[in-house]
Image 1 (cartoon, rainbow, N blue to C red):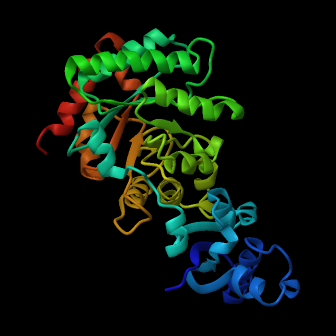
Image 2 (cartoon, one colour):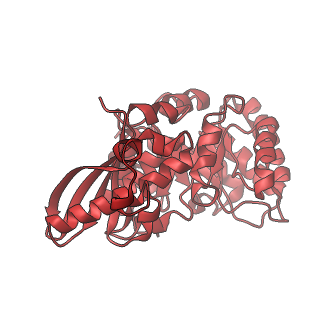
Image 3 (cartoon, one colour):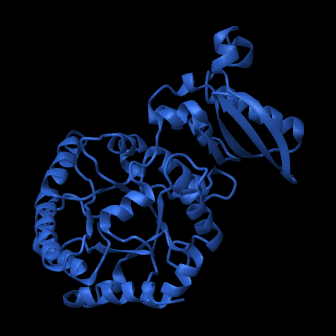
Length: 373
């Protein structure tokens, strides 16, 4: 068994010779970044330089290349691993990452989700079935209003209360004041109902504040954390997931990641970006736009993401896919048929038509998911 990790690329090329040349160019670009004739012999040429393992035609003008890389080129930093996977080559046209196999060495360095599906189920007390995750919004409310909404979600039987990714340090509801208020309200509602609803605040703050805010939300009683890796970096996700002292499940949000996936022959496949990479970084729940919503992801895109999140042979523990957008009680049966049981359903705007009755709206969704199919 080789220790090397490999990346599969779909490349645009006119013929096999062109495809081979492009693949060799990627192998150079992603590692040594010098012309082939000046690569030093020995260790650098034999080990560090990317190696083209496979070239095959997929369609007219479209080829697949699999390139292997040494774990020494990535080291132990998750950000450098991604840099090797698709650093400079991401700035070139006609190259798309369609698969990542971390191999045994990098898999050991990147153990993946700390909790995964089984761990999240254990913490929220939902042994089976789809999970309901209402979203606290909109921006502009004061902390007390978010606290009231969160308490209502607990009473309704939500499994997770997730903050909207747009809630940061706005003056109407500063991060720490908001987190403190929501934690207190949810603790009281849990005591009253016996429900074990988890709270995932949106991590925010200036770079020098992030570490302190992580510790604050943990100490305040939050049960997990929402992170936007497109803005904060996948390295932060990896750092949280591997910190036993934090012991916090991570939910990742797709904000700012769209440009990586939306071009058909460039970037990163939906399943790799919102499934494999999230899982390698250590996310336990991956949020992505649902089919039928306002973002244009297709049923095939969403199925690819869900499969990558839950594949038994994927990196580390299987994680939970979390489709959001266009979700409602009316679509519950359709969504369950598409996604199966191991999924977190995000509920946003549809719950906020009557905030004083959000508990009833959450309970209706819970009932719809539990109803026999």
